[in-house]
Length: 446
Image 1: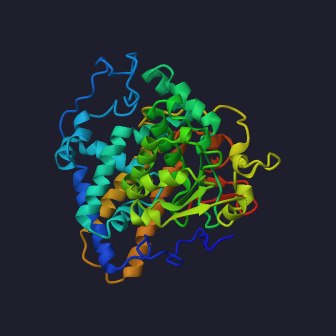
Image 2: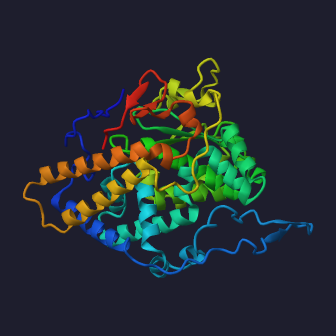
């Protein structure tokens, strides 16, 4: 199937990639410890009183060339509504001390989700070439961004809950978001031949004027946060396919391109494994010349162009591709299948008194306490044993998080269709419904 070696229930240090959890040098381990010390201290800061945006404030408008007045398409109704505007408007060094540490803590654990927390931090350290100050700045900037973008809420609300909240924020906003899902502007599937989950962006469906930019930002975050369920060891990156078949200049939206590039380079580092630009027409060459200056060289190195289905199948087997790409309606991918029911709405404010949620936060507190003690200790005499012990404590964290996932993560269409399932035994099952990947229990993978 691929070069990926799938782990067993027993945790080992075999097949671990260098500079990843379970395969660190003494210097890299020391950087990880130093990072944790700074982060845990940050979680204790008091911050300042939160001043939320005034919902009664008059919404900005723009005038067209002919004088007609319309709402500013860049105005956000949902995004940023629960965070202090100073957090995003001020430089990081001035904004960060204003944010209560408990909010930063909650946001970090939402970022880690079911992933190994060490792995989450290591992504930022690798992205900044082990420069502690630079990587810490990158992660804390991500935390304040996630607060503004309400990333934890997007995950906990789930598909139906998010649609309902968007309608409350502004009538029609939830409908516009649902329309994008129904049109399958973005779908999930795969896996690719490296066992990575795949995200398909069908650009021919997109027309910039049909929905506000806020909806497209939310769609991006919703898909990224959903796909992260399967983005961890050993498939710790994702594959994106930009399907440019039938692309015209009417489909171009430079604002969302810049947002997507920023997401992967600034807020989800070391997450992109492969990007396929499929069936790009000649007109795209001009646009590509505008996009390439935005790309970090590391990101640019992961981009390939595929001219036809045969070339794309070098990276993803045909049964992992959606019908819009294969043209074969007799062989739909899992995401092509209709929903049997609507996803159940999740929580805007997750009840803290539910047993699985309380157990999860107790596990987090225990993880933090053990990490603080571990990080303050000198270099281990037995490096391999130290690395193995960290994987074991990460597994305990993961098991607790998965047990609470049914509450902490709202249902999506991918839960209803069976790509993502947490069964009655609290096991996380991933099923792409392909020849190479039917059902796999990935609960114990760290």
